[in-house]
Image 1 (cartoon, one colour):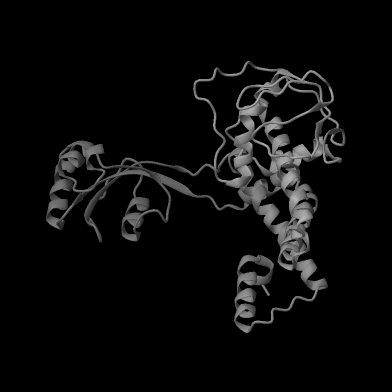
Image 2 (cartoon, helix red, strand yellow):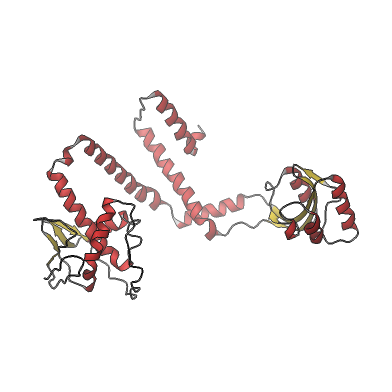
Length: 344
């Protein structure tokens, strides 16, 4: 195997190849990649520094050459054995599963890396992690009490996420989502919406003059464009469709009392001035399509299932908050986010 210094590409001609690059200060640490050499490895030298920066500054996006041609479309790769060993660092195995962990954890940082190069970038990140971790371990960092406390937090968080995935996310089925949608739609009371226009003026007398002109056959949209002081005036006073609760009470009451095609025979006063209202259409409100709201319904079911699990575990476990102020705030916050506790 030949390795060129600097940013020049290197060639790997053996299935068992020793990878080194000037961006790595590996010293005597041996890094072995147990994978066949491919043309993709010629890009490793240029990716090394970028991936290293991911860990030096996690918010730095990996750079791409804007002038580089787009990679040709490739056939989907064959499934990989997650436990297959594809490399070693100082005798410790790196498996496909380890790379999958890195890919999942580095989604944001690797987002700008071309899809075909992300696996290599993740592999390089793993090597960087192993190298620095080995040095930290040798220096006794792992024995520090604060570090161990942080590791316990990370372990608890990982266990929490794993259980949430298996017992909460995995428990909500497509059939449950559909059933919840059907039950909520059937429980909704019938509701109408109206499409209206209005002419807003400053005085009652001005509104009465508008009504007189309308009684004489004037076009409502034309009068709105000429007389209305509201922002919808240039559009002929068109307010579109709206349901109850969307307009100020006085305007809403007058609009929903009118039949389609009728305009108000008396001026309607609100906090904005005096209105003349035309209702152009009235129709039943159509429920949202299942596909449109299915994600929100699933999220609601996940929330319910999560709180059910938490409530069950709280009943089996002693939870004591020593600080009085924090205890009070914790109890209030727990009750406010848990619908089942709000009913108690």
